[in-house]
Image 1 (cartoon, rainbow, N blue to C red):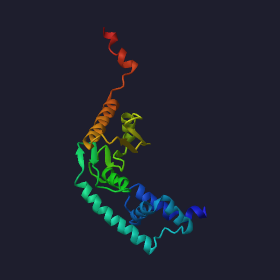
Image 2 (image 1 turned 120 degrees about the vertical axis):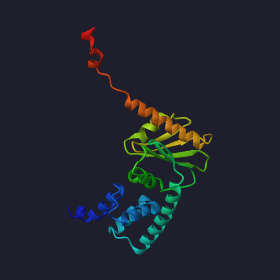
Image 3 (image 1 turned 90 degrees about the horizontal axis):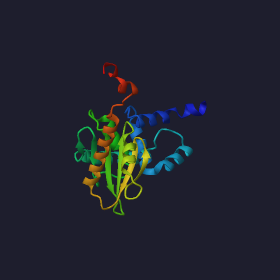
Image 4 (image 1 turned 180 degrees about the horizontal axis):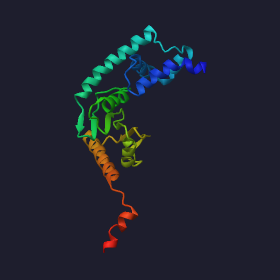
Amino acid sequence: RTTIASMESLINITNDRDLWLGEIPDSRLWQGLVTICGPWGVLMRLVSDPSPILTRGERNAAQDFVDRQEIRFEQAKTKIKRTGDDLSFVGDGLLEFGDVSDFCGMILDRDPTPPLVAAVSTKRIGGDWALSLRSRDGLAGKIITLLKDGRKVRGGGHGDAAALYFPYSYTEDQIHNSVLAAIKQEKERSETPNVTLGDLFKGLDKI
């Protein structure tokens, strides 16, 4: 019980960030530190010093990262390709590694009219494409299931955080349109009325 009680502040910081509560300013800095140092680096820090209070060096490094990240976010927001209520798509070259979860979370949780899916494409060193997908109702995972074929298009992840990998021959427009088509297909599937046995026999007594 004592050990758990000592972790309360860290748990509150984690929940503040994961649930987008925005009540603890340092939660954003801790997330920045995770991006800079990696999860294992932060874990080693907590093992050696379990304090939730950032040192001056940690705070300065994390704040610098967050400040630069905010600039990227503002630029990326002006380049979002929004398609109705279905998709917000951000192209290559606007965001860096570690930005995607925060940026997509901002779109999905803070936008007054959020899309069903937020997507960020990145052209990798080998020339192929990585597409990060985020959603709030399991749609990202369903898109993966619809689009990956195990040969040209690969993918993985879980319900609301997933990724697709497209070959270099694809263009961003093709990737964007593929995701839109998958969203449309899934919406049509989920909106198909369920016919029951009672529906089939309804009105037979009047024949």
